[in-house]
Length: 492
Image (cartoon, rainbow, N blue to C red; front, top):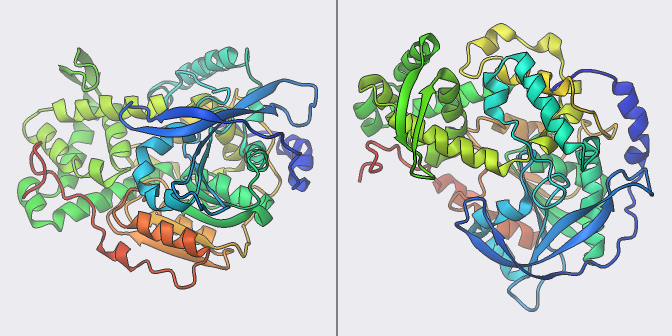
């Protein structure tokens, strides 16, 4: 997500993309039986898979072609509805075919009557993936010169098999429509989570006549260039999680105000690291490293994403400050950092943010003093700027960040404690959505698809194809997981 230059060249290069709303005719897509697996290898889904060949650079008919991985989970009902649900993953950099198995139960109601279609967005999964070892720990924990050097190494590797600038949202939505046409669907429904909501909204902008309904989960409004607010949103979400603990009698009795432990621990780790030795939670082998404020920041950030992870935070912080036991925090770091890094194609992530976000930052509105007060500080901003100073910029439609106006029905989902896309972002996106409903789940984090009643709300919405008469009242009864009082779990 960094680098600031030549917007004019991008606009000129992309003018053709901005005006062309008709997808090229796509050949039929042949599918055969396959099995989808989540990154942890825990969940399996039976499907039909195939590959669709597309131009890497749509403006170069004689250039390199890449294969898009496509999977379809056929509807259970033989008298299925004609309009499927396309599921779009987040990141940027996550693959739909690996994301879906981990959340498949949430789509069972929809799957009864509709096909589920998954397209690994170009640069992810099995669609010419742009994988490299440049991860958040490198970006947030290294000096500028080291980040730039790591970025150059990543780029040099990827450029052997890809023109990385042609992996942006503006091109990817045309891939999606090519898949729609190849599978013979006239209209589709969309579910997008996180970055996938940007893809869904831009597809809707370009191909509204082929879009029946849209579910946006953890909403990135089109107007937003991601990056400057990352640290502030993360800090505010953490404060809300701690406030929930202090208002919970059992949590407060066990840990007091977690804010006190959090502040003391930050101050201590900024002064000196702590040596830890523990069994790796995934391999069982002994892991030894210096636990620093960087590692704490990773646990806090990724631990805030879900209510299940957030339920552990007060306990882990208290163990480290009251008993100098860093094992829970260190174990959580190894677990969440590895699972996230394994799931994201960082090269594709860079191609998106360096083209679509960093060039649109308004640095005059960035308060570095306020960012420094947060546990992430200025590292996300500075690290992304370093990456994008060398990463090639790609095609971006001129209206990618323009407000979206549509008559297509849209269901928006937010968590009140979302550290990435707070409910206010969904409200910003909603301004131009003529037929929309916004459901906010109290105490939940980023991505609501697995919350208890959301599957019912989504299924009813897609069945109706309308927000009129949609009952969302069950969401008021959804509550986040109680805080863990011991490592054995919450109170009975």
